[in-house]
Length: 463
Length: 98
Image (cartoon, rainbow over all chains, first blue to last red; front, side, top):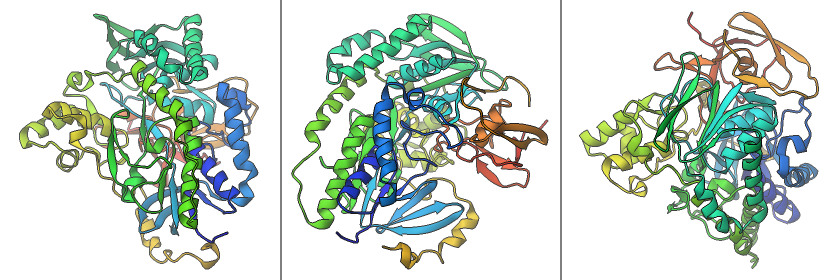
């Protein structure tokens, strides 16, 4: 038994399993989560006032969801669980927190970052119109608020979430006007052998597709999204496939192109990053157990590379074990490497089935808004690259304010990097990545004054 | 507010208590457990206007990442609609200049 402070950020599958492992070792971990209830995005729970069956919320995943949610609930007395709390800065073995309008400092001996992911977005003209949301947003509306976007909704982009969300919405009474996949439908067949790494998961994907077909939902592959139109809100989506241009009437659009790891806290913690070919993104480096390049900082779940919820449970437990070993000077030989292999193989098959649209940056029109916070266009980014010779993303940010708005680049960075790489003829990895800046999310200015006197952690909580 | 609401409640959920609030001065009701975003978008089709072009906006990620859904109370206080729960008596403003 030690009195070391183990702090976990994020209460999704990775964070919950990390906490469980620490409790099993006799620790009392601190779990900090921005949401009101644990579960993460995948197992997001509705507010207490809304009672819903897990089968209705999580479908095929209800069993897995219950296993991890019930386990965490059972351990609550042994966990210092702090919901509704934002981590807005990481520095010198301490986190800066915001909860209920107050900031405070939380020191740590070991920090496990399980920060999850958001939709990766390659936008199209009109994506800022009311009614246009991410695929994840459509899912949050359904799981967390019991609401459908629409009434008539088009789901677009690519990735396994595309068909899952479309099916979830259709099966809850939503009118799905079309599912428009930027990857060709034939790619799913070609990727099928690789999907056998996780046959049950592949079967579920095939099921969603088949059920959408049976419901008469038009499914199209090889689609290029041209524009969403409307005045007060979206009324149509125009798209192109196999040489024909189509216009689909709709009241809402859900779209996304796979997931983007949430790495800002790892960056602020000083973790080294490396290029991930499969994620087409710079990600914090980690060893097989989950150790980052910074002593005492560990990485788990989709926040460190997209492998999905089941892999996140494994990597959460593994990172917690590594933290225990390092703090206690013990050594555990078990590694999650072997258990992770099917997840990695499956991810490669998914990438083949749901490839990103290769021509996206080339085809993005100059008037496309890339930054929705400050309405900076693709044309402005290209002009900057052309006129100043900028070839690096932070330089582009300094000159155009891309990535400097309220979202801190969370929504625009993948698109901006692609526009810059295309404009300069560089590889995507060579334009680099946006450096993270605290606070990672907007804070009321008045709070900053409160921070100083509160930096000393009260003795009774500093254990 | 006019137009078809962007959000529609699914059917068959257990009944919940109503919560009264005002939206641009108009008396409205939503349900216990609703976020501010849900309360507004089950009534209408916008949350705010863009700071840069006055174009209407109605949120985007719904998970506290994109910061597209900040709305104001009549008191001037700002809040992120997708992560703030509706409280009885809230006086919400969409900023619609009309």
